[in-house]
Length: 319
Image (cartoon, rainbow, N blue to C red; front, side, top):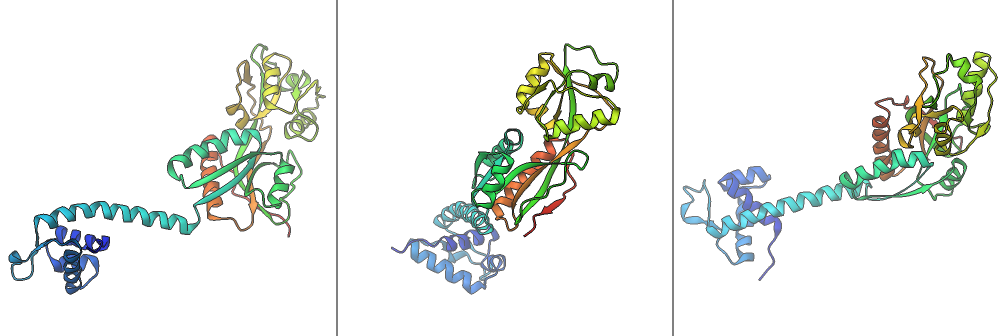
């Protein structure tokens, strides 16, 4: 016996729902004779009488037999399966199916990439992401070698760093702005002024790092010579030293929201001490999968910073 054509099951379903061959033809954009032919062929395929032709009422109304009603009910499952297949085909055609290789520094991975992965696991499981923790220089080298698709990095405002652009052939997009804060040990008495705080001990980063430049600029702006008594490269170490009471530090919001800050409080000042822009860099022509992942990252960044987006600035590397 021939196999059942699922599309003819959908024709039977339309006749059952509309109550007539002509109405089903209009709904399916077919002729009435075309619908009748599909039903006849479906009866041949199943070996069943599906349409009760003794009750056609002048040829306008149509009533299904018990077998026809049963198969029409099964056609609902067919319609659902075909709709899901169409959505999957659309997703595959647009390129969302695939793997995106993402590199980032530690805090960006934990605070932006991990939440993005959790969202994708629910809303877009066809998109697979491979994660790699890298330094900025290593990440750029991997991008240019084709071993990464996207790289999360940071760019400091003109007040805190030279405006170096992306490497040739790459495009850098802004994700969100990340403000810096001054943090002090909880056990300290509140300094009488910012100048008094600047003159005290500090836990800071190596020369040319963003937080170190901000501290030096604050000292110059307020005419205070600051001491760099403790130098760290890891934010978690910096915060541990601050919590131990050995000095104040300057750290960005993203880090403070991700790394444990027990024993540390933010020093309130009306002065905007500086910020950085979190960026995502990749080739000029990106896949749809990369674009999808970047959109999720952008939403995560907006949520993490309370809607504080960067300007959407795009920087292109020289060719």
